Image 1 (cartoon, rainbow, N blue to C red):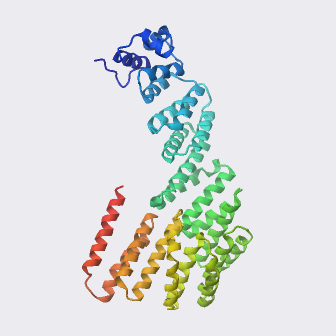
Image 2 (image 1 turned 90 degrees about the vertical axis):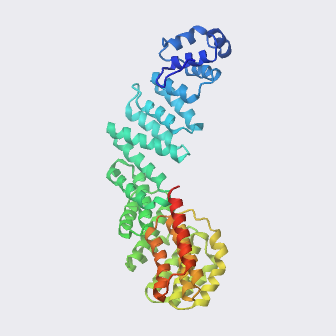
Image 3 (image 1 turned 120 degrees about the vertical axis):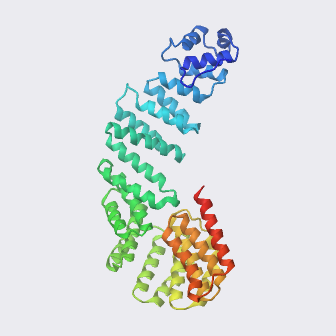
Length: 428
């Protein structure tokens, strides 16, 4: 039996498979419409750059995998247009990241065209690929190649693209922020619009992680950059406004709230009412804050309903108006139907369960409270808010500590179940 080595040439590969099929050159000629003399020259290596069309015809008849064909073919092909054609076909259906990356690297190594032009063309093609894992691999390839060749703009652009993909994994939100900040060292090589997008995304990211001073700085830089998207500018003003609120700078909060109100977007009214109520509450005007929120509650959209309900629960707990909290729980079906497509909504849903747990503990419904704290902890873990997850678990332990009681078997079993769930999900 004839075997072929992994490092065999394209011609040797074809000859191996033809012999395995017990097929003569004449027979292969009839089946492929490629003359036997050309096939013979390809097998012997006399044709340095065989036609890709002919090679694919031969590969199809001999049942050679497209991966094997392409791996060997790109060893002898240097023309950028041919390589880009192969690349374009691969990204339309090929799932093998390794073979796509090999073709991409061969494209960049083409001696025919300037390196910067090749990187630019490859970058533009990668941006429209849909599968995130392939995009990540190719952008990382561009970063590595650009570093080796001093092509600074495409280090910056590709790093930004990698960050934008990786930040969609909410379970690694904290580490993604740290790595994303590395783009700031290359910000001068981005266009004004790209810098605006970078500052905006990092600013929102920092706000979510409660790093409010950094968020304000990034948000203000985003507003100074070129952000053509009207909603993005409005969202930037809104998260800066919120940051100032949490930093206790209520004058700046009001200033940015005024700027935010200039936008005629559907969510602006709800968000404005929410901040106004929060400001009333911060100034000790709890009943006024409750009144503002209650008045707006029937008209809230999905983006703000969770926030409004949570703030109302907080205010009712502070004012010991527990019957009103029970009324808010009637909205739970709608609350749970809201798609948690952002880390903010996922965190706010976890916060809802935590507040519900607080309510149950106050009303001495301990088991229900523990269940809610565990639900909240799991929700916070999904979006990498480990400190808040730990706080929820600590609240469970404190229930028995405060009562000076030994933890009952039911609670221990629930904590063990939660621990096992965490171990299982962390290994996925």
